Image (cartoon, rainbow, N blue to C red; front, side, top):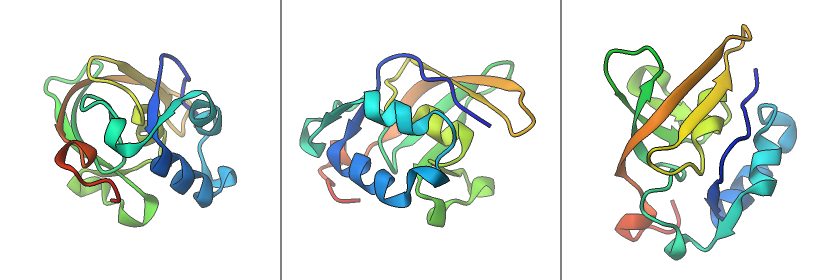
Length: 133
């Protein structure tokens, strides 16, 4: 159960701190390295096309007939059936910090490779002026 660290990532300083407070021992393999390699920016400076915590995004998984909407959240708020995906899940960790058009890659718990393209950011807290969510 790991993600592929590929491409540039941007994370807000607040998201970086909050994720490290969760403890690297809880993170899927690859996420601590992805966070350490990511460009950290103040929340007001994050581009509006970047997946941040509590962003609602549209992704298209490889082989899927239609895109799906998900919201990237912290573990306590995860409700996969409602589209709230934990950042500590392989898919959630692979999406954090990516830009629209980027390809997320991860492995399922069974070791199968998966990928999805970030098609759109439908809502990003920082773009709406919310810098503390």
